[in-house]
Image (cartoon, rainbow, N blue to C red; front, side, top):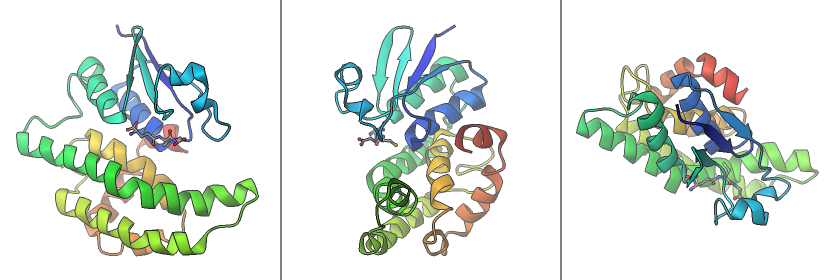
Length: 210
Ligand SMILES: N[C@@H](CCC(=O)N[C@@H](CS)C(=O)NCC(=O)O)C(=O)O
């Protein structure tokens, strides 16, 4: 059995992506907190594991792996018998497209701007940058509509089975759904709307994200 430690703070969406896979696989793991609000992710000790100072980093039997796509695909093979990757080549390509769209086009407007400005900045004594939030809605909407066109959406993004694509989008939705911008962003994505109603009820989501 692989000995698994996830290095990263529990509030991180990408850490939650990895943990959702582990929870759904029913695998035991350790979570080693690495704070991103207090700069612990840029300590020499952590940079030795991940030179970019991003969380998560996976430690598996003494090997360190960073980048969530690499981590989740590795874990899927090692602990879940590839249960969370479609065997059909086209569906697998769709899964990878959704992961890449999230990384490249959705995460920045949705989390780095809207969620951070609306949910984090005020709790740290700052003031929400309303212009930045306003300007992030259109790119977030464009990215989500691209994801909508790649999904089956019932009950999960790629059909009857959970895949890594679901684990990528769920943690972002968990935060974004608590912002006033959410309704505008999902206004033209009916499949993703019903997907969210379904997946937000999963016990693993409650355990990892709530
Ligand atoms: N490309 C990385 C991105 C990970 C990432 O952006 N993690 C965020 C937390 S959700 C982080 O480490 N932020 C801290 C920082 O940028 O200083 C991956 O796929 O793992």
